[in-house]
Image 1 (cartoon, rainbow, N blue to C red):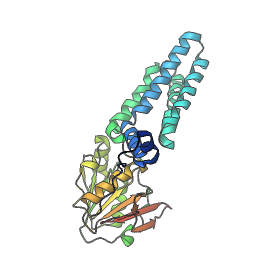
Image 2 (spheres, rainbow, N blue to C red; image 1 turned 60 degrees about the vertical axis):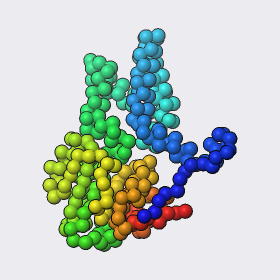
Image 3 (cartoon, rainbow, N blue to C red; image 1 turned 45 degrees about the vertical axis):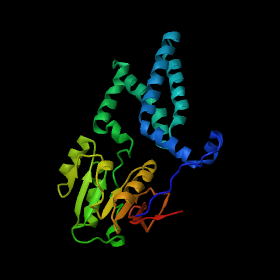
Image 4 (cartoon, helix red, strand yellow; image 1 turned 90 degrees about the vertical axis):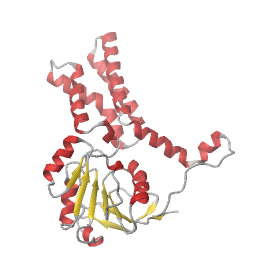
Length: 277
């Protein structure tokens, strides 16, 4: 089983020089910011509303106050690590302001209610992984031909959401023992009801032992791929597969790249993995 090279820098150099030459410093910073998400978005939205209230008290002009708060949101959006996060940060105040204004008598704090519902369906712990983007129909077409599995092989959907990927995996592997995990209890319940053909547990897929699976399927986000690669390298047995829809693992050479039915790519890695180094 292949191990991953350490990102630690060489000792004995000045701190500033290590930061300029050590790519691990950037990786560590990105991981730290990723762990804090969505707190940066929540803090930005709160700051926009606080500025709006202050400007409204100072000028009694709702238009000026709203414009100032929206500009603050746009400025804060540059802190987002990805395009979607920048969009979420920048659009939070304008959208919540528009909703509150459209309903009229609704208090300004009422925009927190849909956020509370979102937190129930998609808890804070899950925000650090992929958002709820179901696997499109047909995205895994041809997977069974590219990666044939033995009858009854165990296949795991890491973060199954509403069960869309399990449906696709069942179409490809009708004789497989399908498993899934989902941390959000409403999504877990929905996927369990939808996919009675699979064994779905309510769990964080990072805490699930992958060693018993012949294939692990991921549809995560780019920031999660290094961690997934390390977990797969540590736990998957030789010959087992890691399949990732859309996002490749930058440190590994894929065994195969499948052009899926809807034009997306499925990156396929087989243990023991081959490093790009």
